[in-house]
Length: 179
Image (cartoon, rainbow, N blue to C red):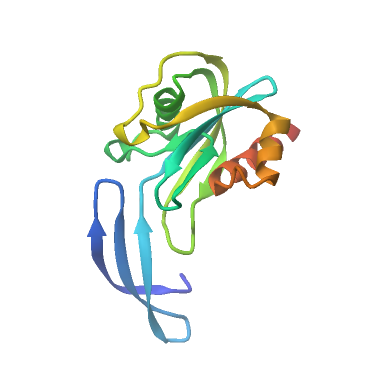
């Protein structure tokens, strides 16, 4: 039994990338309330690893008003039913031009479980081959670069990498490597 029961729902906004709904709820004690939920499709995040080097992308994140370094990641509404590994390979190729000879699932991440239903799968990409990026229009200002793990961790400590999904995925990578 769910601790919170949905008693009503209404969509308040929708575009190609997300929808927002407001659910009327009933708590276990019988009290009622509302929950606002952002629904987005499953996303994939990819950690391109070549020896000790990690490949990152940097782009302007409009809601923050800042450029941010992060691992390649994204979703494709038209492929919302696609296998997450297929989405990961697509995101890697689109954003970096890289193609992976090996793609290993590291784990599932919840984006913001208190307000969003979105989940994603993090992948480790190795045996990489260079190619030409095929970015979406929104990604036209994207930059890419290789960083050593020491540089990556220094950027995290300095607040230059703050993307929660990238930080969580890096933890999954470390756990994967420890076996």
